[in-house]
Image (tube, rainbow, N blue to C red; front, side, top):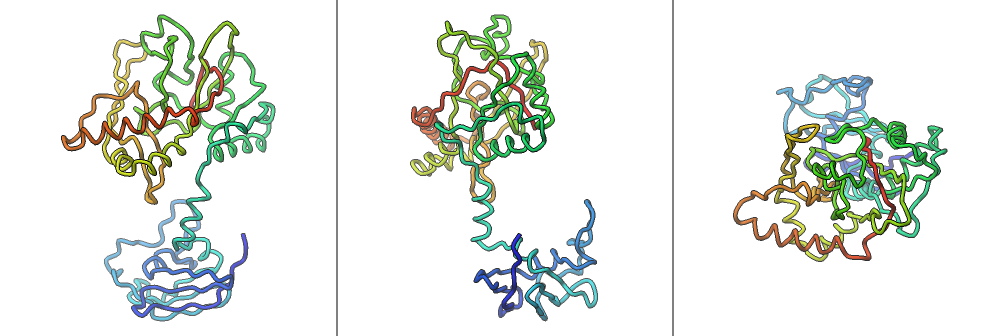
Length: 346
């Protein structure tokens, strides 16, 4: 990390904010309450996990903390805050730490941008040889590709059934879901009575495990066999982040409807080998504090009956249909490969 130097520090007229002027031209603004509750002095800063050195519930802390004095050098800042609960306490910050946690709009936008995943160019989907996973460095490189572009093709994998579990355990703990650690997607007339994925019927685009509070972190699909006589069966992928961008731009009001109005997802079956009753209510599109899409819940197969306020019924179905029409646009689809088993890693 670069070393940042402070050029000047000034308090606002109300003494509740300081402005830090940096040598590189950047300007940061920090509130007095934020400064006090994030103090990095030896008394206040956390040294070990779970440490709790500043009791924010202390009634002696005022809601109107003000800055009495501010001193600085190029490498640090020292502040005296009025109505502090510790007598003669000096709030301290190292310059590099303070710059790292700047919360101006520019810095917050950079955090968001740096963490955004951009789906792989369909013509340049990254491939990784399975042998690279024998080392920690190779494993981390593959995981980084997944985080960066969303999808990686792993080549050279053993055709032994269950080998996908071994690879999954190399990456992260396996999440045991309603069908166990491993689910085989093959034409099985008996199994198709429990799940249509075990039939020859084509499945619509969907995200798996919507009926859980949280979907799988990494989903692994293992293509073991694909006979030339078989027609169809390819897995298709859609960049839902791209779909969300298009949907928000083309139908902003409908986009908002699907971020607000929830839908039930469920798996309820007591006759199956592993009886299950799982039901959850959540919106199709989930946003974070910064209005960024962080989750997308779409699975026509596990959707339940929509039960929402009367005024939301027609707007919901109108928005749902518009999104479903964008999702199937041919230019957004990527043909991948035939998969007959999958496993979820945390």
